[in-house]
Amino acid sequence: MSADALAARAADATGDPFVHPALFYRDDREYLAGTVPFILDGLTAGEPVAVAVPGERLELVRDGLGDAASEVRLLDMREAGRNPGRIIPGVLRAFADAQPPGRRVRIIGEPIWAGRSDTEYPACVQHEALINAAFTGRPVTILCPYDLTRLDADVLADAYATHPTVVHADTGAVTAEQISDAYDPDGIVARYNRPLPVVADALAFAFDSETLPDARHTVTAAAERLGLTGLRLADLALVTAELTTNSVVHGGGTGTVRVWAEDRYVVCEVRDKGRLGDPLAGRRPAPQEQRGGRGLLLVNLVADLVRLHTGDEGTTVRCWFAL
Image (tube, rainbow, N blue to C red; front, side):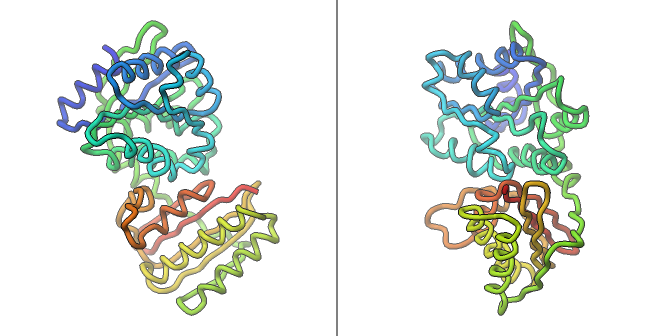
């Protein structure tokens, strides 16, 4: 059974036009067997197609498509999706929303690859889970490849929980394996909502409504001393302003901002007493007519990585900026 047939079966079973299969592959030949027919079938059906995968895989797909590559939106996920929180608004929704209403859209997205760090992975797997809520009811198919030979067993197990259907690629065809009995995206979001321990040697500044400018200036000056410059320093200043303002408006009126160096990054974190009740906050593109409500979206769009923990005790948003 093809990936398209499995998608159709899943859509018929659930009544939801959104389809989100995981594609398990073992080598380049299986990768092409699982992706190129999927793309060509979409083009034949008149569906807009985008491919957002790591650069080395992108070149493989480009070569496999030949002349048809010019009809496909091709994106290097190492750049477009280096922050997983950016992928839904900045890659998937950006492409799907640009198409004519009602037309089915087809996307290949590979946000999890060998080399993603342990720090990045919780944000990656939460992203995969949240795709399901972000696209419910929309005629969109998003195929997510997973490397069976290079990804850890726990990562592959999580793929069954974040994808309602799973297919395995063979060198001759894509064959259906199953509708996933382990599918539990809400459980994944909750399981990876992990506390972020306080970094003891970070510079800390407690702020309220009267000291918001001081918080921004203090963090920006510290980040500059740590080596952040130019546009990245301006991005950190923007993120600090957005997060501290959110804390004052929505997080109990006060908070603490911290900044420190970590590996090749400057890290900025804001903690407050509020609780974030919407897992998709910051992952929805804001309508042009909307006033406000763009704070977390801007944070996701400019930071290199965003991790978030929220609970009854409060919310922590931690952002990384590459030096």
